[in-house]
Length: 478
Image 1 (tube, rainbow, N blue to C red):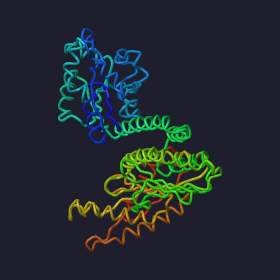
Image 2 (cartoon, rainbow, N blue to C red):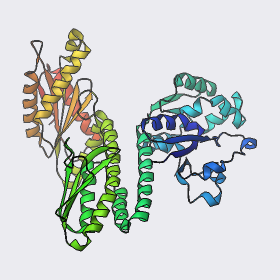
Image 3 (tube, helix red, strand yellow):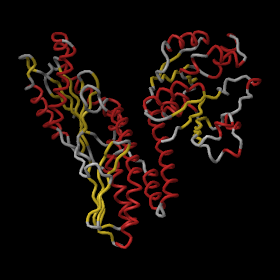
Image 4 (cartoon, rainbow, N blue to C red):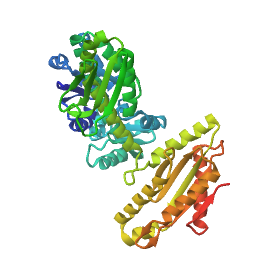
């Protein structure tokens, strides 16, 4: 792809540079001044004419940013603008709104490293700064994207200067990277569509498929493949349509496509030389248009590869967000989300579920005796053994340390207790240097009324009761 230029606020330069280096794309980063902190007499900034005339200019800004006033009207149609309600929304809306609703003053590393200069541009000395900030906020929140070293030291200086408390929200760059990936995918897709418009008479069919893909909130590859297959069925009316995931064997032996007996075509779906699969389409209802169908499929195959590439990146980021890094099962954050979803489902459908919480009674002793590395291996082994016994419909989480939780959809208390006995036996049979591994269990069934907090509190209470009653046992909430 041709080089793309991102024109962005100087406060976010390092975030853009960090993500751009990871993406293996030809991206130039150019900054404009932070108009939020710029003195009036210094607001004469102009976007260079050469930059405005470039083919692939993308501007990121708040929808109220003065940079929008710097764009001559004649260039508006050829520049891609990404305007946000709030600049911080580039890093995820939920956390930002949480703090804004509580009256917090949000800062990012790029602004914070120049806080003295920024306060000076506002016309503040120490007294007026303290007076102003204490009137508008009760806390400073650093949205830490981890692009600056020693940022907490700088934050402490700023906090002490204003005499206001602070907190740090480690937001990282996962959401931001996903956003940039999405934007690049849109740019590439638009470019491909333009090429189709010029080169192919049937470009509208390709546009329909891409529009269907882009308008769907697709987070899984199999969902995307299903949409692609459905759209091709609608457009081409084939009797045969199959998708084969790539499993290490290039069935086209280096070719991009193959026509069989003038009735079907197999196209290779790939992007950036990475093969994702093969699409076989044939026995068309209107065979007289076979050549046109071949041209269409050959043209669109790389666009489909781009779509699959983007979905895989989304899947990877989402999986990282909900998976425990050590054991590979779900993590605490996903438990909180899934518990709410399960309660809402049961209220809606009039069904029930059960919740199991267990921890390893003698894990601390094992850790102390054999070391943390060995302890990690024990946790991994427990997770593997328990996961193997559970159904595909069950959800298994690591709460933290040696504590685990299991959500059992459509399971009553009696069956949940039976399963707990099986799991306890499985754990007891795990030999640790000739020691018996022991575990305590708490079991509760949803009563149709409690909220997530009350449900969790109950299972936590019965687990505590099991621990207090001698450990290595199961307690049920009745």
